[in-house]
Image 1 (tube, rainbow, N blue to C red):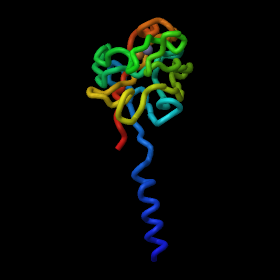
Image 2 (image 1 turned 180 degrees about the vertical axis):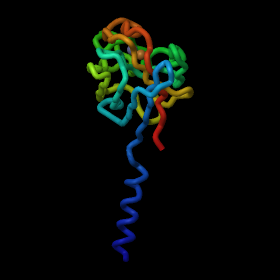
Image 3 (image 1 turned 90 degrees about the horizontal axis):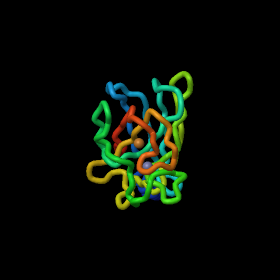
Image 4 (image 1 turned 135 degrees about the vertical axis):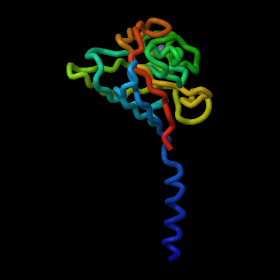
Length: 169
Ligand SMILES: [Cu+2]
Ligand SMILES: [Zn+2]
């Protein structure tokens, strides 16, 4: 009996301290769901695992944007790139990068694609770099590839899908 109580005490804190995570459903200009992303803590920031379908084949710029609002069809409501450290755009820019900058997402001939990308400097915890500031943040997928250096948005073209980043319960 005493041993059982001890075990209960030890295991409880493990349950309540489970790592935080977040989810976003990417929707296109017509409001159709074209992808999902799961966000978990990662090396120097967070890790964003994304999966899409029904998207034009090719490379697509993919970023965290600074406002958690996805109003189609242009998704301008999502604001610029998430940039808590006020740097320039681009993983290949010496003055970069934004915390929301990530590698391009590759979509195959069948319209599906998946990737697992770091967003360094972003966090699921409170404080600087939090993905849950007032107004939230969003993931945005673009029509064209990000050139990884042109400030402020990598010449990635139109915003074709958007999803608000929501904390998992
Ligand atoms: Cu973007
Ligand atoms: Zn950027």
